[in-house]
Image 1 (cartoon, rainbow, N blue to C red):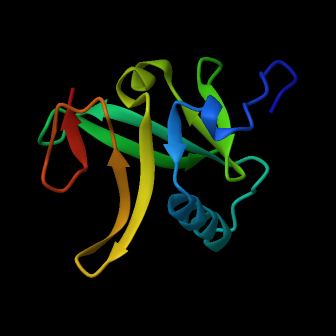
Image 2: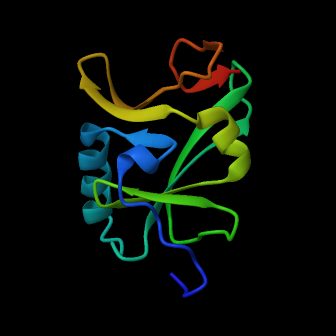
Length: 124
């Protein structure tokens, strides 16, 4: 992080996208498994057009942070999100499910007016 980059808030209450403890545990496991640099890697959370309901969720581990990205730290993970995605993700919780019928990250988005059956896309 350069000196010009603002410090990320340290508490979950300052965040607009929340990472559950289970999701954080899985993210840390993936970072360790891929041997990524914990000091540089961020979790990018966002949305993009597409999917069966209009928008698809984006989760990506990256070292690229844009000047306009919002940043916050939860469970030792630096989370970044672009301003346009924040319009759709404010108040969203990213969780992780490991069940018989499936395993993966799930989004609990209070802004979604509808979502597809798999939970990977939504409309707002």
